[in-house]
Amino acid sequence: MTNLPARLREHLAAEGLGEVVTPERVHRSEDGTRKLLLRLRDGATIETVLLPSVSGPGARAQLDADAAAADVDDDEDDTSEGNAAEGDAAPHVRVTQCISTQVGCAMGCTFCASGVAGLKRHLGPEEIAGQVLLGRAMLDEGEELRNVVYMGMGEPLHNYEATARSLRLLTHPEGINLSTRRVTVSTSGLVPEIARLGADFGGQIALAISLHASDNETRSRLMPINRKHPLDELLEALRAYPLPRRRRITIEYTLVAGQNDDPAEARRLVKLLRGLPVKINLIPMNPIEASSLGPPGLERVAAFQDVLTQAGYSCFVRRRRGDDVSAACGQLVLLGAKPKVRRALA
Image (cartoon, rainbow, N blue to C red; front, side, top):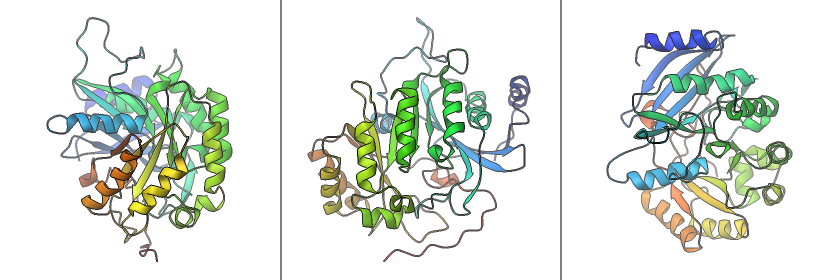
């Protein structure tokens, strides 16, 4: 835990955010990741995560993987606020912020901690966008907030109205003025809302899909939402999503040992995604207290990735970031939640 700086408290007061999102604790990982525990006006708590780009061996590969998660090319230019002015030296550390849209989550995915206690309430648009203002105020010297991903606590499209309003706040020229190319919404597959997002924003908001299986039986076991919106409906919605030219949908695939990590599953995934403009982000499952499930070994991950790359897909393995402070993918959890241990699936 770190003490909150006085400049941050002054910034919150100046922006009128002191009563909307109040930082309670900051946990800093050894890799530079920061997990912020935020308290809302009603006393509820959420978490948001700042992910700085890495340096040293493997940095290029990790930048590529981070770009895949945010559906951008790392070297791509944009004119959004916060970028260095022409002729100025660009900040040397680019930061991606992962933001929450709900207190808890109703989706019940077996490999994710956020839904352990169920859904408590939706966030308002000011509570969602306020996380980004707070995140910018907490950047270290030399850092630039480059990407925002709706991949924190909650299902963004289950809270569609507030998510859409927060997107407009973040991307409006007179608001926070982020480039739409730098904002990604991740969903577990709410089909009607995927269509609505595409229509409302003309496909300009990057889309990421939490897929995690190539057949309905496995996906329904891992993700109950699949019983309502099975794979054929989801794939139809992705084909209809109005992607701008040269843009791709990001497929997020959490690898769970013994559940969805077999190379045969990867071959089925190749067939399932055929014809779709996608890139694939493989995420070895991060441990959570509420589940006895876990990640496969490195050789298993590599074998799965090889099948996809040999089929011509851009496929990245997401490096663990912030798992020492429970800030990694799937580890954000409602404060005070009492988890029920989920046994390994048959």
